[in-house]
Length: 198
Image (cartoon, rainbow, N blue to C red; front, side, top):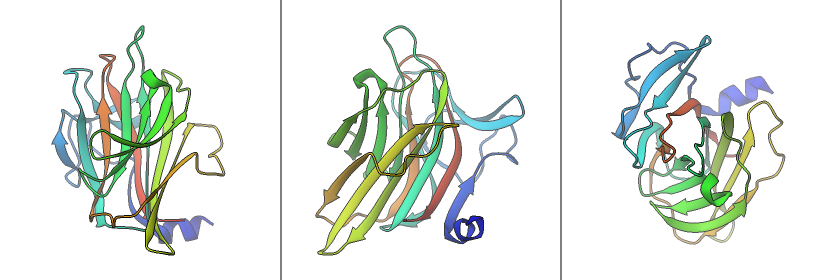
């Protein structure tokens, strides 16, 4: 099984060999002060808690369809303020699977803010959350978007939690991660991965 997963992998970065205080050259920052940090032997990418805006970067190969992207995210809320974060496919104006703790929802978006689907999700502050987004071409000339999220350390859900059928062909683009530190606390990212769709 591990051998099959390795064959299907198109990109993987857990930052284990990345130098703290710097940024790996294969990442394309769109905006934001992303930098590699280390804590307790684990290295990860960190986005500062200020300013309060939307920040992102792209990674992996340029793909159009039949592809799957995943990453781990860590954030913490303060009072009634919560961070939001997302994993994306098909470049800047493509699709995103976004965790929106303020809405208690997991959302599928197109572009910056067009919500395609939303399902209830209770996010836990101060924990790592894994998110996975997939786009695949289906019979009849449609494209199926599917997403799931789960607390790190628990079992990955067997079924996709949210989905949307797109009628227009997706554009070619790289996978991405996005962070909105609305709580004023840093957001951490780890285990960026792109594989062929399931």
